[in-house]
Each structure stands twice: as C-alpha cells, then as structure tokens.
Image (cartoon, rainbow, N blue to C red):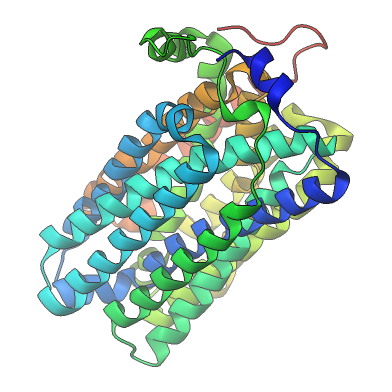
Length: 413
C-alpha cells in the first residue's frame, strides 16, 4: 500500500478529533514513564532482596536493555503489519507482564535469572511502544501544526515522577516489590486499553516502502534507512542524551546511596528530583525550540547536563549534589524528543527512521548498565559516571544534524 493511497483513504479529522488523539498519546507516554520509574524506584530494595553486587545489578539491568533493543529492531515491521493502535496496546500488555514477573522474581523467588527474564519482556514491550508512540506523536504534531513532541515526552516524565514518588512511598511503607509492581502493571493494562481506542487512522500508520503484494521489499527498504547519514548522526545525538537519561534511571538512586551515603528512600526521591527536572525542561523546551531552534537548544542542553554531572561526581555534599541532579535532568530532557522529531521530519519514512534513531539511542541502555556497573565495581559509581560525560559531549558536537531540512528538501534514504 503506498503512502498516497494511505493519505487518500485516511479520513479527514476535525480539530476535536485531533485534540482527542493528542490526549490519548499523552496518556500512552505517561504510562510508559510510570512503568519504568516504578521499577527504577525499587532497585535499591531489589538489590538487597537479591543480595546482588553492583556488577550483578548491571547484568540484571542488561536484561531490560537487551529486551528493549529487540522491541526496537522489530518495531517498524510490527507497525506496518498491525498498525499503531494494536502495536501500542500489545506492547504495553507485554511490558506489564514483564514488570509483574520481575516483581515476583525479586520478592518470592529472589533469583536474578527470573528478574532478568521479566525485565527482558518489560524491555521488549517498552521498546516497541517507544517507537510506536513517537511515530504517533510525530503524526499528531504535524496534524496540530505546532511543536508538541517535547510535551509528549514531558508526559512520559510526569509518569516517571509519579512512578518515582509512588515507589518512594512504597519503600517507606515496606510494601512488597511484587505487590507494588503488580498494581502498577494492572493500571497500565486498563489505561492503555482505553487510550488506544482514541487513536485514529492516519497516513503514517503504514509506511510507503511496503509493496502492494506484501513482499519482503518493504523490509529491505526500511533497512536502507541505516545508510542515511543524517539519520545516523541524529542517532548519535540521541545516543549521548539517552546515556545521560538512562544512567540516571539505572544508577542515580544507587549512586546517591553508595556515593553520598543517603538512605534507600532518599535515593528514590533524588531520582524523583531528576525526573521532575526532566519534566520542567521538556515543558519549557517547546518555546525554546520555537524561538532558538533545535541546534542551539541541544548544544546548550549538553552544557547543562555536563555541569550537573560534574557537580554530582565531584562535590561531596549530598545537598549540593541534588542541585547537580537538577542541572543534569534539565540538560538531558530534550535530547530524545528532539531526536524523535528530527527523525520523523520525512513523514514517508517516519516509522523506519524513528526505529533506527531509537535503536541507536537505546544502545546506550544496552551497554550503559553493565559498563557503568563494571566501572562502578572498580572505581565507584560516582566516578563511573564520567563515561556519561564523554557521551554528552558527543551529543553536543553532533547537534547540527537535528536542523530541520529546507522546505521541499525532505531527507532521503
């Protein structure tokens, strides 16, 4: 089915329908953040329950990253086959099942093997949902005619704030990990079932590379996006910023506990400060992007993130380190949403391009947990975060690739 065919058969949407669509996308982004942060907030307790070393926790986190890569790699193909609504709904159900299994493995069975399996399922669903919801968000952004992608990612951050706060409260109440994560998983399944009913058909639902006879030419054409230099450079931007975001997700709570000697609950709440800063950065980023453009905003973001990391790593005061966490969160806030918008500048190849960029970005989540865990075992978690600093610098250097193409000069594959 061609893009022209999809465009001609897609129904015209009223303003009210576009806004309803937007609100449904907000819900989907927030659910993704809620699930992820709910797991992250319980990591210190999971470590204690599993009696795991820092290095072993890196391997456990690797299960989440590896599953995410699998979901990302197959996401564009699944989107073409099943469409956005069914892809998103199915992906969230898989995520919820994996989250439940990870909670049970940490509470009842206390074995890292089952926790890794659960996190792999959780990651696969999360990765596939990530691409699908970003394609959906980019299409809605074009329908609205204004920048909203950072706000979608702000909704993700709102979900992470809620997850972090609920996780901190669960820690305070000594609520079993399995009970806590089981409740969150149930909320995710019910909410996504309601949200996907509001997603309308639209031209981006099917990519143009699919041949009319359904042959494998569609697969080959989508894989050719990996040869697009601009898409690869955008992927490097997202890689660096995803590493900045993901390292906080995986290690900030433990780094505060081990490096700044705070309690487990305080470590969870400091992670909440990070995601709150991410949320503020994404809401404020809409106007900044419209006024100053992607390139300047991304370079400034890299400077902020680097400054925050240096404070967290080298300033011994936990209170001052919290200020560094705010700068770190603000600096890391816009890399992923801007990268997704830039990848989707060419609507014809939006699904495949977003899949490529997201896969490169999620490589940070694949190699990040074990590499920081390995370094942290030998030099301490705080000094291991210097690796993040290097990749943030790389994101700043390649920020020019995010510049919007001239009208009529859409990127090609």
